[in-house]
Image: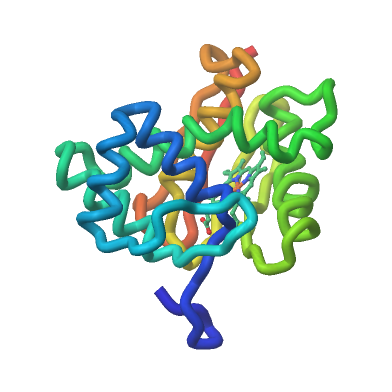
Length: 190
Ligand code: HEM
């Protein structure tokens, strides 16, 4: 995948380090090593502060899908859900203790993805437009040329799980899973 400037699209190391943790946690270390071998990733580790090609992440996920029979979309969603506790730990200082799922989602664009960009100007997290519709619904408009809305849906579910609110949060994806623009409804049953 290339960017508008013709350069290879890169993503922050945290996303890759946590992908490794996801594969190790769900399967095992040797599964991870085999996946890297199969897709031809040369370097043996990912560093938190590094930047790596987005294509590598897709190659690993597609290979894992082929090996497990689980769709790449489903794997992306599982991975998104899995990474939340670690991601929140890394960016802990930007989170207000009184926030729950609703507030976290409302503040993601400004506080969280804002913090990601501030801490590392090489990053380009997706644009999330979050709007309130009534008291109990948030509409999240995801926009990214990377087309990773499975990860977005997974992160939302992961945030609800993190706050122990899974039972009261329903996440509905309104568009094609691989679209660039995807509307996600988050309903709060409280
Ligand atoms: C709550 C705290 C959050 C933190 C700390 C966080 C952090 C990050 C970071 C570090 C990246 C990599 C960016 C890059 O390398 O350019 C990223 C990407 C991403 N984030 Fe977040 N994020 C958060 C919340 C969310 C939420 C709520 C969603 C979904 C609604 C979301 C969806 C995504 C997706 C899908 C990507 C992959 C890249 C892309 O689609 O273009 N994030 N995030």
